[in-house]
Every structure is written in C-alpha cells, then in structure tokens.
Amino acid sequence: MAVKEGRWDCQYCGTTGNLGRHRQCQNCSRSRPEDTKFYIADDAEVTDKRLQKLAKVGPDWVCEFCGTSNAADISVCGSCGAARESSSPVQGVKDYGLDEVPTTGDMTLDEDPRKSEAQPTDTSKKRMLPVAVIVGIAIVAIICLAAVAFLIFGGRDSDASVSGYQWERSFEVEAFQTVNEEDWELPAGARLLSQKEEIHHYDQILDHYETRQRQVEERVQTGTESYVCGQRDLGNGFFEDIQCERPIYETQVRTESYEEPIYRDEPVYQPLYTYEIDKWIVVRTENSQGSDHSPYWPRADLNNDERQGESQESYIVFFTDADGETYEWETTLDEWQQFEQGQKVILKLNALRELSDIEFP
Ligand SMILES: [Zn+2]
Ligand SMILES: [Zn+2]
Image 1: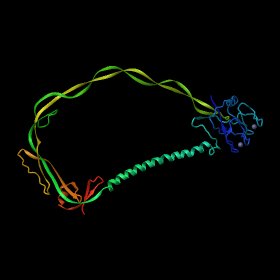
Image 2 (image 1 turned 135 degrees about the vertical axis):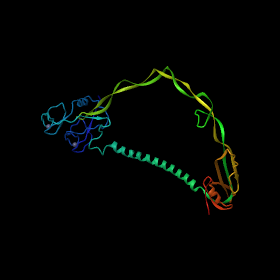
Image 3 (image 1 turned 120 degrees about the vertical axis):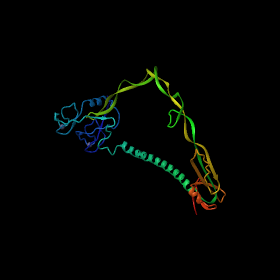
C-alpha cells in the first residue's frame, strides 16, 4: 500500500512544513507534542525502504516526563531515558475520506500558496458569469421596451371627418317542418320509420398471444475492484492509502422471448333509427342593408308556420383624412347614431397605420 510522508507545523515557533520523519522542529528543535496535526502537502509516494519501514512501526508515544515524541518501536525516551508507561500519551491514528485529507497545518491557513492563488481566480469567475447574464438580460429588456415604445408612440393622430356609413341587418326565418333524421337514439317526439343494426364502434378483443424475441440490456456485476478511498494518518508523520472495494458492472445484451398479445377489432352493432320529427328549421334569411344613416329591419313576411329566428346587425362609419385616406370603424348602434356627416374627429392610428381609437376635438 502506498505510503506518503506527512508534514507538520511547529506550534512553538510557527515553522511550517516540518517533514513527518522529524520529531523535532527543524527551526527551534522543540519536540512535536501530542495531537500534532499531520497533513499531506504533496502527493509524492514514499519509495525509500527506510522511510517505508518508519511508517509501519505504529503511532508515536510522548514521554510523560520531558514531553519528547518517540517512535513506537523504542521503549525508552530518547531524550531523558524514562521508560514508556502504559499511561504514556499516544499520537492518534485518524482515517480521512479523499476529500477530507488535510493539506495544510494549523499555521499555514493564510500562507498556503494554492489557497491564495485560487481565491482571486475563483471570485473573478463568479463575478464574470453574472455580468454576462446581466448584459444578456439588459439587451433583451431594451429590445422589448423598444418594441412596446414603437407600438405606443409609433402611432400618430390624424384629423379626419365622417365621410359615410354602412349598415346591415338580417334575421333568420324558421319554419315548423317534418324532417327525416338518423340517430343511435330516438329523441322525444320522434316517429320511428325503420331501424337496422349498424356498426356503432369497434372493441379491441384479445385474440391470441405470439411468442416473439427481443433484446434486453442488463447491468451485471462481473467482479470487484479495490480503489483508494481515503488516507490514514498513521500517527508517526506518515500516511497510508485506505483501500475500499467496489463492484464492477457491465452492460450485457441478451435475447429473451416474450408473449405479445395480438388484438383484433370486433365490431359492436347497435340499432340505428330512422325517424321523422317536427322541428323548427331555418328556411331563409331576410336581409336589409344600406349606406345611409337610417337603418331598418327587413320586412318579415311570415307564414302561419313560420317564426323569426336569430338576428344579426352591424354598423360601420367611414372617416376620410386630409390625404384622402379612408378608415373604417365598426361600432355599436348607439355610438353609430351619434356621428354626423362631416363631423370632425381625431383618429388614433397605431404604428401599423390601423385605426385604434377615435377622439372628438
Ligand atoms: Zn519550532
Ligand atoms: Zn523523556
């Protein structure tokens, strides 16, 4: 298993990056204390056999008498000669996930070159993106505002006068007649003439199954692989890879048989009725129209079996402006009747030169 050499920072003199193999600070010579935080500053693997051996001996212990940190394979303090006791503090062994492995010590939080370099580029990226988005939104907003402004302010007023009229009035005449009809149901008041069985609709009926083949994809576990899922702080200045196992999957295609249901259309018959029935039906439309200012309804010459049905009416005023351009204005009877021939009006034209409203001077 791959071994890496850790680093540690001296809490007495602030020296950073002491090598894991050193139990004394390379600047002030103080022994590293219990609970020293080890970190990995570079990913270089230890290949030196002697260092690999140091990594394997176990976590350091700290002399209770002089505070010196000692390797696990010696039982007497290298500084004062006191024996290791069962109560001697031991540097902890810690497991880290891959994204939790410390890369700086407590002293290097503000001085780590990677952090100070990364920060400005990070923030500039964060600022660059919103600027592009804001510019995009601004451009779209300006285009929308321009379009709205064109429609609102692009129009103009035009002086004109009433130059003509047009009106139309009509209504339907209905007669009470006997008619022949066909339907799946017999309405009230109908007199049945005949009936026959006809196809009303089709039902989907399961006829049989057919054995067919199809390709199916399956995720199949074909084995396992081990991978580095973390780092173990060995408590002696060295780190070791933590290995985890994970399944390996493969997508395999196989052919399988299945039963496909086959349907057939089964006609469903119902009686279709032919009948006669008396009802009001439109027999003609009476119409009157003119280009004067005096509309009237067409004369209703109704027979005994007839009545007046739905009516329709429309009223149009024409305006002509100084350029001889004529505009049409469809309106209600009330408004239409108030216009006078030659009356001055102000036409509200939109950007497309269409009449949108009328004002009176
Ligand atoms: Zn120091
Ligand atoms: Zn000692």
